[in-house]
Image 1 (cartoon, rainbow, N blue to C red):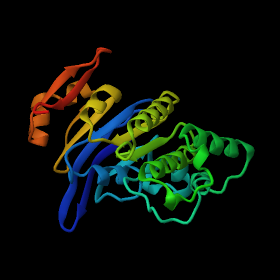
Image 2: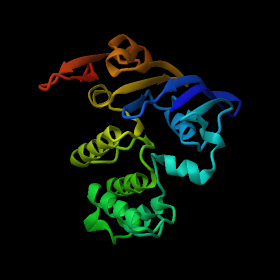
Image 3: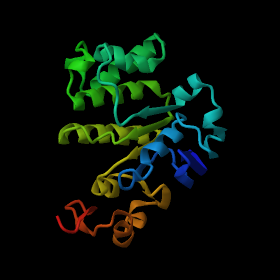
Image 4: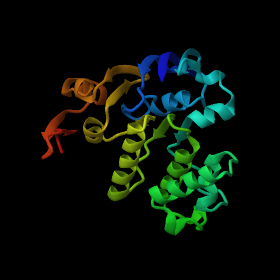
Length: 250
């Protein structure tokens, strides 16, 4: 997926300005930056939900914003930061919405696999509004998994934030498997340690501009992070040899 000089203007100001980057199939790309720096706006633009004031987003050479809605939905799925909690459907109903009305055996198998993979079997007949925020997040992720025809693009806005540690690890492993199968994974994160150790690429935003893009080890330098976040960071060595970035004052 290619992002070519995207600018988004709202209320007379540039929320995003001249963003160019590439998200590669088979890779997990982390979108990073302080609050209100344009991460959600960028993800919504990539997914085709916001039309840029200038610039283009291309998937396999095709302009995302020129695609038919149904075709785009088969190729790009988005997990929003917040999903309406009051929709009057069961867990299975909501996950099945990702099938876009398809009812064949292959699609039903995909539905069952997504429910099992996201550990929703015991909740399948529960009403969505009665679930915890973390459970609701897993339902929305499962819906997006069945929506995309692989290889496709999964766009996730802070997908791990509502989850407990075990389920966050499980969802991250699901995303790694989808990437290994050829999907393009783009997700916003606040956890720099996770971005540095668990993602293949990083885009670092500051005030609507892209400060750097590339492998996390090259993008997430202490000097650059201090400039972007206004705080000092340091690197810790994990037992597996990977590095973990934490605020220096913790």
